[in-house]
Amino acid sequence: MFNKGDLVIYSNMGICQIDDICEKTFSGVTRNYYIMHPIEDSTLTIQNPVDNDRILMQGIIGKRESEEILESFKLPGIQWIDNGSERHKTYSAIVSSGDREEVSKVLNTLLCKKQELEMNDKKLSEHDRRLLLYIQKILFKELAITLDTTVEAITKKINRMVTYKMNKTSRHEVANYVN
Image 1 (tube, helix red, strand yellow):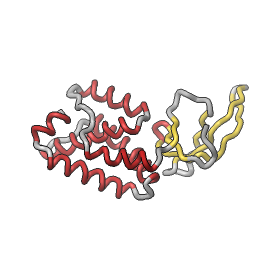
Image 2 (tube, one colour):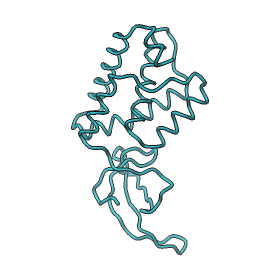
Image 3 (tube, one colour):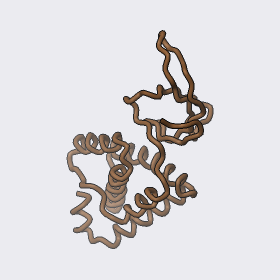
Image 4 (cartoon, helix red, strand yellow):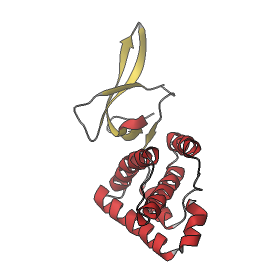
């Protein structure tokens, strides 16, 4: 159970702060609810039952795990799946799991593929582009908070690592882990 003031990742809303935990009655059923708001929009109020297990809600990671995730961008990501619909389904399932280590591997692969395509004057598919932006928005913000820095600094650092890795690795080797 979370406490008032905690920062959490809430479904697709991203990072939210819990403002209150209180009892509410809807349709004659009384339950405890988290009352929270996205840290990017304090005017939006979200109410979620404390016992709701259908929506992903998890605490933000600690500094050590954030540092490990950041370093993981020096390594290859996950296997690239050529079939677009299979890739979207598989990568989206990983993102929905909330496992930051696995999510960062998906992001790593998407960033590498994006760079590879841009070197050939091509672009990511729309599904891949949207997933990339979604992951970046939440994961980069979470890393920035836990490492006491900015999203811009995290973005620059990860982009430098990916660029260095891509430049260091021959095109043939890159093809082995992003193709």
